[in-house]
Image 1 (tube, rainbow, N blue to C red):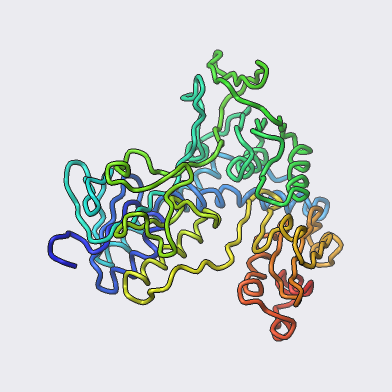
Image 2: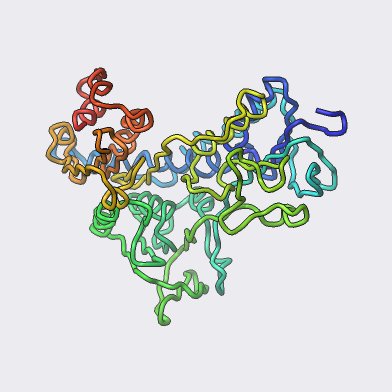
Length: 443
């Protein structure tokens, strides 16, 4: 670094697209700064993945007790207030923990909102901070419907901070966030109506498996309204009236706007410096460079085909560390990126998707897992998977709906990523009995 800059590398945002790579980068001797306007660690640790999976843990327990009813005596119920309090205990220390790691690595954390002044300068609360290289890692934020009364709706962060659970909730949208929160709130006793933008939930997942999850939720009392074009929210006494298609209406206690997530590219000076972006985020090349060669992007703010998930952001952040530290000059090579929706049961997938396999030259193996003895141990009633093989019988894709779906996909990832054939698969001895042994037995 020449002395004209404050930092060798400056990150805008402190989430997984930043800190997983920034820490080893600073430890390698590179002078690193991070600008953060909100909580250290970004969405995932503070009001995303970690909070969600903590709130979901009692749901998993109640579902297991339900399946084993008659063997396990008594009805379990979820105390929402205690569940939310437990979530706070789990996540409250994470910003300080991550901040401590940054501090120990010699990274300066600059608190405030950063706005680009030029290619090498970001203004934070009136003060200029300069760097040789800058990484935009500002992530995504909840989309908000642009309709009358939109201020009456809440977002995912609000939902996970509820101290008490409203009795009647309308959820707008039927993607990841909606379906996960539907599952949690329904299990905790709320009456849920889902107002869908189209006629299918979770469009990125295998439709027959999604149908199983939706059908199960409907049997549990959730109402799904397809093609509901929401036009207004209005206060009516102590309730909110949601108006949708053809002037139909619904009265609820609370509204969650889960209509999607959008990239944080607004009002940070990208137009001023001529940095290209669009509604999907910031386009980058194979080195995660933007159209301005000293400015990079990492994490969910990138316009990319890979799933916008925490593990993807970690991989990108780590790749930039290796590039900036001189450990690689090769373009990024993404591995197989799995994805999962934490409904009960879960749906998880990795590699070639079922809809693509059915159009190509693949062997598609579908299995009703409820007939497998291991799944009968805890009476799984919804459990199916589809394995996809190439013509050499290498596993290239998996999709599963079950209580164990995320563990199954994690178990099979090495076979997909490293193209294991029958010889490699035959060399693996798994713990027995376990989900791993039951899963590999399908190959």
